[in-house]
Image 1: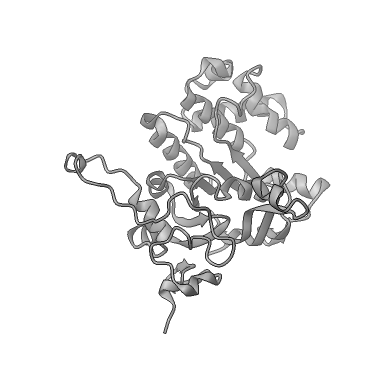
Image 2: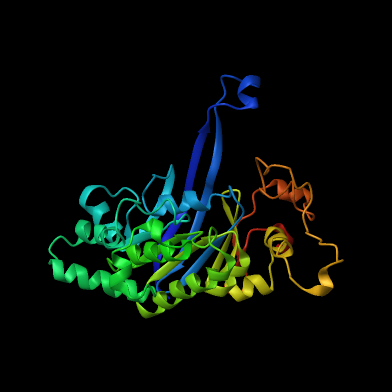
Length: 329
């Protein structure tokens, strides 16, 4: 299976300017390790999921893939070409093929522009040779694809005239209109009503298949990830701790952090009303360990060997995990 995107040992540290530690050692520099050596592959034409709690580095990785920010080290390989240091025309060409669906449908759309102009903007940037008729036909067609019908009426509306779900469909249409090969969807349904989340995810999934578009879906919600994804990578404190086919990982989680995420999923069943929820995690408020396994302070199975950094290794068929629990004797 061909990989359309390969992330190779990417690191991104942000300096911490003010903290309690800066008063203890004012001359020492402290950093937030947003990404600490992340490597993952995204297969072409599939939906790959990245899951993790808030602050784990998911959105930072998305911004680096889109070249909104530069990594401190590591490489981004798109369709076989290293685009890590691309600038000018090369970067412009890459962004033609990689688009993003943002989390907030209320702030990602210009309130002063009609839907027609919002979707036309990427065409104006990347397809300047299109005639007005070609632009109009393309805009109306993509509105139909995201089920905003009648498309002629929706094209003339302003964002304030739309619901949250309709706004997010406009954002999807805007990302699709230039026919990209990769779409990064960063928590695209987290701010929408539960009743319409499945509809939005179904649109993304269907368009991925019909248009052969690769989707990199970023979320903290394992329930939606199972619904839409083909493969999954689990991130904790800037590290990938487990990855593999989504059904394999979620039915047989190997890493203690993945197990804790699954434990935290609520099951709305009557028999669970008086049942005590048990999440396999300890010292819930403790911060990630500075050295060794990042999950050391919260892991119920931590051992002395965990003070060393475990490698992400193949433990089962197509199933990788970074944990000493599965070391071969």
